[in-house]
Structure formats: C-alpha cells, structure tokens
Length: 442
Ligand SMILES: Cc1ncc(COP(=O)(O)O)c(C=O)c1O
Image 1 (cartoon, rainbow, N blue to C red):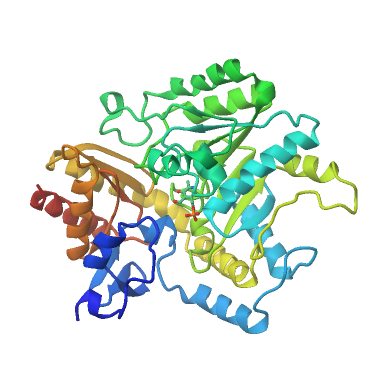
Image 2 (image 1 turned 135 degrees about the vertical axis):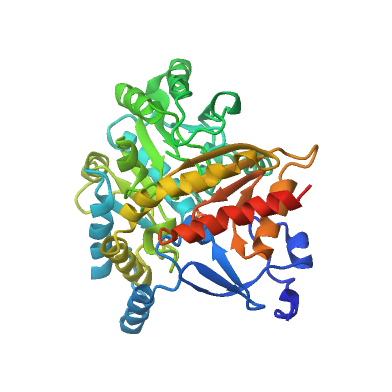
C-alpha cells in the first residue's frame, strides 16, 4: 500500500511548518508508535531519533500515561480553570515544581511552548508594573532564538523566516543579543565551547543603549534546538545571569526542549547551575500525550504580582480555557512518575558520552562541517548547496526515513534528540544510517 493511497484526500489539511506541495506529492505517514519506533502506514518500522518533536522523552505508547488519561476522561472530562479548580491541577503543579530549580515553584499552565513563551513575557511585564516600574517594557531576545509562533515569541525570536511575513505585527521595544554560533572558533566541539562566553557582555551594551530602566526581561534558550543545536559557550549563561541581576532585569530561560531530562538533568538550569527568574516548558512535560505547557516563576515574581492586587481582584489577566486540562494534568503526573521511577534523567546523563562519540564518528563523512552535542542532543551541520540552503539536509532526512530512522533537519543542520530510553545499539543505528545517507546524496 503506498503512503498516498491510505488517505483519500490530502488537500484539506494545511500542514504546519511543512512544504505542503512537496509533502503531498510524496507523503510520509505514521499510523502507530511504541517504545523507540513509529510504524508507517505501509507497515515499516522507523526508529525515532527525535522523540517525535523533542517531546516523547519516555518513549512512545506508555501505558501508564494512557491509562491515567483514560481514567481521568472517564471521571471528569473537563473543568474550567477560571475562578474554579480541580485537584489534579494543583497536584500537577506541585509535581512539576519538584523538578524545577529551587525557588521556581509557582506554576502557570498553558497548552504549548508558544503559549508558555508569551505567558512568560506577560509575567515579566506584570511583575515590573506591580513594583511600580511599568516603564520596563523592553525585551531582549537573541538572534537565532526560537520561542514559538505567538506574536510575542516571534518578536523576541531571531529567525528571519518566522518574522519577515509578519513584520508589521511584531511587538515593539525589542532588541536582540548576537547568537553564539561561530564555526571558525567552535567547529567539532564536544560539549560546551570554550569560545563565546564574552558574547554575553553584549547585554551590557544593550543596557547602555536603552537604559536598564526600560528593560523588563532577557529571554534565551539555554540550549537552542530548533535553530540548529546551539550549545551555550562556557560562562555565557552565568554572565547573562550576573548582568540581569545587576540591572534588575528578569532572566527567562525557554526550556521547552531542555526541561525533563534532555541534558541529563531535570532542567538545563540545573545542568548549568544557573537559575532564571522565569522558566518556560512544554514538550516533555507529559511525554506529549496531551498538549500541555507551563511556566515556572520564582516566588518573588509571583508574590509581587499577587500582592499588588486587592484581595478579591484577579491579579494576572491571562489564562487559557484549557490551562491545566484534567486529562493533560493526569498525563503530566503519570509522565513525571515514569521519569522518576525509570531514572530517565540519570539514564540520559549516562548515555551522553556514547551518544557524543557516535555523533562525532561522522566527522569525516561527506559535507559535514560541524558536529555539536550536549546530553542527548546532537547537531550535524552540512555544507549547503549553492543557492539551495536546506535541500541537502532535507535529502538526507528523506534517505534516513526510507532507511528506517527519523531524524530532523532545520536548514542544513541535522538534529538528533532521541527518547531517553534509547539503547546503545539504537544510537549506533541512528548514526550509521546517517553516515550511509550522506554517502548517497550529492
Ligand atoms: C525553545 C522553544 N520554545 C518554544 C517552542 C514552541 O513550542 P510549541 O510548538 O509547542 O508552541 C519550541 C518548539 O520547538 C521551542 O523549541
């Protein structure tokens, strides 16, 4: 059965972040998933080297989560979260808080990473207003940053394709730090590069330009994934923290891909020993069983906002119909239990050396101009074809899919982020398949 004959009509679905015409002329469709594998509609097994989209950290089809969701839907499908509550929402917040860096234990639920990013920006504005510094309205993002697709997220984000079509609607009062990607200095670094920590000092330059009294927050991904796996240089995040603290600017870490074990610790903050004031998460929070995201705020940020309002007034005019949806909350509790009982974050740390070695084995493969990695994340950057950026990595991605391995490509970077249950043999299979695919593309 060919992939396209399974679905009668591919035309109604307008696919997100997809070359719709290219895809529909040659579709790739999954029908099932279990453990480390997807099954395609033509019954092929495909090893998942991307945890779906950086989100299925405990592997697919975990019955503990499925059962928790089914049981919850049976008892209560939905409850409103505005001026009403349900016990699982509070329980899920308590469980999430246990995984957060010390002090970041006030949890606001969203449904996605994009919503988490915009929520974090709003919390920062509300915080400064509550302190009587409502003129702090400026945000500092970073070039090549990705914070989802809301107008706040694309405004602080630094990806031209995500910004240019919407440039008329970008929010104002934004500036950007330079990105830290520099192959002349860092190519083939294993782990954190030694070069680049000084780029955090650019924040001092922006503070001098705009004045700290106008700046609400700095938002960065501690490790950027979607824009091609950018590992933070040594000392970089520490320095951002120092400068923010010095100037009363809030530091937001977008941990949508790094929270819940990806770097061998519960969060990147824990991994790097740098604590932000606000931390966004989504992806692996409930193993991607049900859409869910969250923002963790420090007690001081939360308490400042709450204390500024009258006792019977809504303190923060923000929220979603599905914030802390009962089924998503049940999935979260079940997933966090799994992460703990199976020691998956420790496992991620233990596997990272073998993962790093396997990725760097491809150093001499055709077109490879950089390999970078940390925890269970790796990126392989390829030379681009003249005037056709991204086409070579796309061809490798398709070849790997045909050979039974799902990888991800953004521009000409291949990205790897397998579920934390990946085995040593499967790690070898992933990179052997990529090596073979690289030999077959022009
Ligand atoms: C760092 C980061 N922030 C935000 C998002 C957006 O998340 P979502 O697609 O769930 O809106 C992503 C998605 O890849 C991400 O990597």
